Image 1 (cartoon, rainbow, N blue to C red):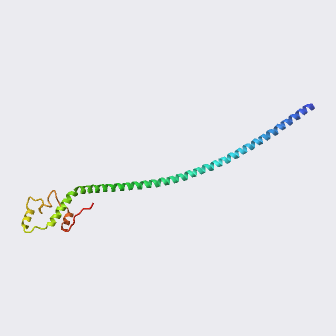
Image 2 (image 1 turned 180 degrees about the vertical axis):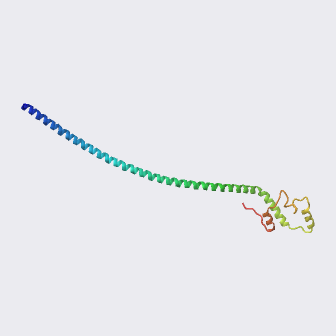
Image 3 (image 1 turned 180 degrees about the horizontal axis):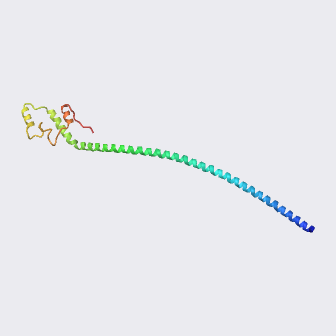
Length: 180
């Protein structure tokens, strides 16, 4: 083999130096790329941890709000149930009061008749018994045509006394009056 010429040796050395420079440049670039990739990976890991923490915080806040809203819903349902029971009670009371109002209306409509009857009864009490006509009165009370005869009073179809009225007949000192 022949020895390379000095020009070839210089060219080979220059080529080796250029290759060496190129390798050094590529190694620097590779190291910079590795640093960049490492920094990006660390940044992504930090961001991932931050996102996980934020997601966990949001999830806990959501769960707390769900518990709060569920408790509020239960309280609202209890309140609604209480209101519904109150409304039912009030409706029942209104029904009773309507019936009583109707009775009072009927009483008020009958008041003029009752006032007239009471004034007639008061006048009869003031007059007292008739002297010397006891036989005439007893005959008129027991004749068959009278609606007020003692034997027919309980059997008359238009007028009958209830058991309470029968018990109260022995109370002679009753004072009649109305209040409005």
